[in-house]
Each structure stands twice: as structure tokens, then as C-alpha cells.
Image 1 (spheres, rainbow, N blue to C red):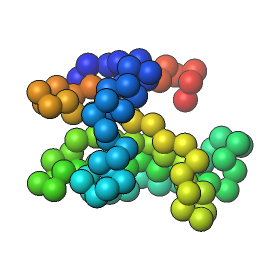
Image 2: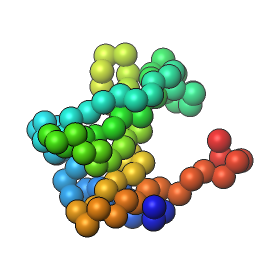
Image 3: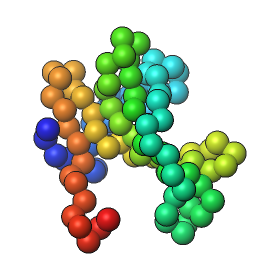
Image 4: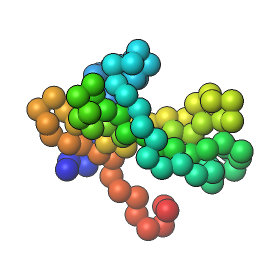
Length: 99
């Protein structure tokens, strides 16, 4: 898997219209992990890891998002993405001091 800086991964994500594909139902969302957000800025919100699947159940990307109790998304960014050529790209893994 190729690791990209977050800004390049986000650019690739946006260039392929992933937010609009998710919003219009082209991609299906499955929450795979959920816990209370640990950042004090998002106190009371939930941290989620969401897999995005095509209509044929192909995992095409993963998103980390912070969601308020009313369902509004406070923050969202891609964690990984599968390009059209099937190459998988992801943000770099955090170093131990960042966890």
C-alpha cells in the first residue's frame, strides 16, 4: 500500500468526488468502529471509522469522522482509498508519540 501525506490523499479523494458519491448513495457506508471522541474539542461526540463500499460490495475507501449526538459531522477525512487502477493508497501511519 502506498502511503501519501494527508493533503495528497484528500486531494485524490476530492478529485474522484468521493464526498458526493457518498452523499448521493453511490457508495454504501458501514460503521466498523465507534467510540467516544478523545479530543476535548469534540467532547460528547463519537469517533467513527466508516468503510465505503460500491454497489458490488467492493471496499473502495475508509473514512474517519467525528459525529455529534444529533448526527451532524464535525470532522471527516479519508484514511485510505482504492484508485481506479486498483492501487491502494493511505495516509501515513502515526508514529508512537502521535497516538
